[in-house]
Amino acid sequence: MDDLKIAIGSDHAGYEYKEKIIDYLNARNIPYTDVGTHTKESCDYPEIARSVCERVISGQANRGILVCGTGIGMSIAANKVRGIRAALCGDTYSARASRAHNNANVLCLGERVIGEHLALDIVDVWLQTGFDGSRHKRRVDMIE
Ligand code: RB5
Image 1: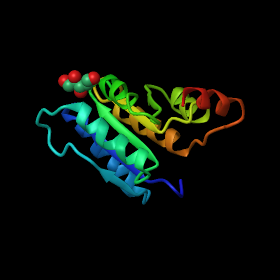
Image 2: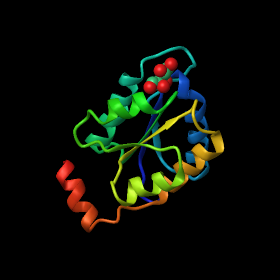
Image 3: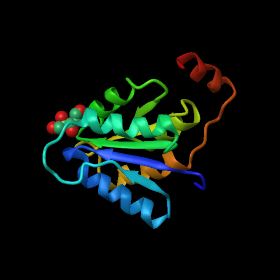
């Protein structure tokens, strides 16, 4: 996890998991930028998604993590940004495959859908898994 630079964000519905994930990143000395939100007051997830994705596309970060209530709004918004491959994951198998097969550069999670410990396991697997390349690269290139 040496060269990781994370951009992380949530709306109000994902705020608590964002803070837990930040605790996880701090414990492992993984650098990150927290684009907000910083309170539980209602806010609009598309703005947060754009902010994280812009950092990934510009190279300020190399991976993004987005949390909302379901993860769905964040993933829809993130995947509108050219070059973003956002994966909404609710299990560790998908998290691993999203990196190994799809080279996902943004992870989306739903705080109202999965438990906190599963969410942190998903983050752990997702950050540790590399892209397998070969035939998967050809397919990702087709998307790009
Ligand atoms: C907020 O109520 C909720 O709609 C949002 O967090 C997200 O789940 C949208 O997809």
